Length: 270
Image (cartoon, rainbow, N blue to C red; front, side, top):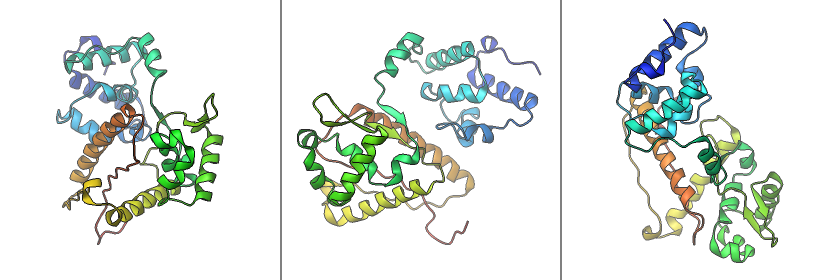
């Protein structure tokens, strides 16, 4: 099989199918499962749904799809423009526009190091609150239910050293980048401790706040391996929407947490 020529195709799914088939034939250890482990927003299940035309191929996933397909820089630009036209969007940004956009990006991928203490995420985000920007000592009241003053001070010092927080020209503590994203699929002890912490905070909020100040919704679903994987794709899409929402909102009057938790209810053993 010869390497597919992207410009000769009129259907993006057909091109992806042939390109993946080519890689499988010519690369001994290539598999979608193996390569997707290094991709944050592309899973084997999602790729399968795209190839079956059950999921739309979107521009925001183009970079990682290009890595999976092994495209050259020229093919990558062609692929991204192709998806944009297919979806009725504008063509993808020029290189110069991408550089300008990257300078104002509000999202960084962080290692689990930030979760050395799971309250670090709360302390960092608290500096988006208006009252804390005006008076940093307000952080102790804002996070009174999360950690002690000593623990909060320790967290602030850690975040300053690690570069998640910084001091501006006036000496005030501000965030370096408002949104730091940790890959939640990493089987890391610090990530697990963070999840336990946010669930504990959510449990306490049920009694602490009235229903008009919090929102809770729960579904109990019968799933098998296939439907579980499909549901994970939906959750990842929702998570991306929430992250884009967070990028647009720089400050607020209160700190809120959103939890998406999918877990067996009992009777299952790994």
